[in-house]
Image (cartoon, rainbow, N blue to C red; front, side):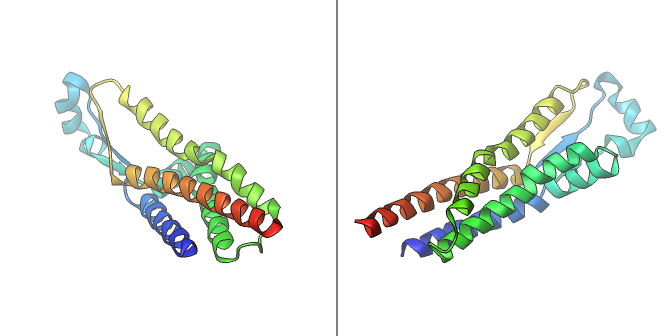
Length: 172
């Protein structure tokens, strides 16, 4: 029964993570203060509301030659969470098969799990300080991403604690 609950929680976390990767995390509505009307006339495409998803953001940064920043965001916000969820899934399915090295690796990855949310929050914070009254709105992807991170952290701790309790009982 506990294994089923773990698998359901991991499945929900995977669904939330996948959704958060493709749906908008935040949107930017540009403004130029008192010059907004003129800017909309001169360059209407630059003044349209723009939505950013995680994948689109990484792709945009890469295409704009910000390869280091795109790589950092891709590693911490896309690759490490996928690895973490995969290790969690494998550990839940095949208890005892994964070595202690993999569980140690899971603990290390879990420490960086909140870094993804921090990156998005810092981006929003920086953009909120834009002059001219530009507005940043957090979208559903941000909340799905945060929920996925928190759920995977809680599930990892639960699986880890469950495994330690089972190992102690087997030794006794």
